[in-house]
Image (tube, rainbow, N blue to C red; front, side):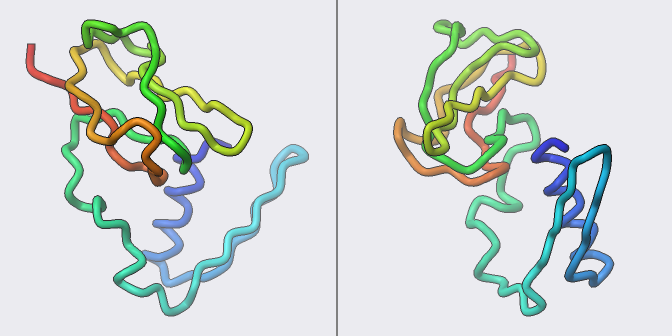
Length: 123
């Protein structure tokens, strides 16, 4: 199961008023539990303010710029950065062909799941 699928499940749970879910599928199991009193302040500051056309973090961790797009040009699937999560360096990939602007976060800055890292620029 991908992190984006887990986030979608959590959003659907909130919308339905559910606070617990267990999924078992092919040797994989997942248990989600949401706080019943989900405080408004727990929503990240960037939520709802992200441009739609962005490259976003696929996991929480520390942002590290990198990848082959030195001039900002990126193709779908190109690695444009990494998220360091403990001993793992998780790749951040471009979702489409385009030119990326400067990073929206600083090198080594802590990022959250879904946070915008780059905006696509008009060509």
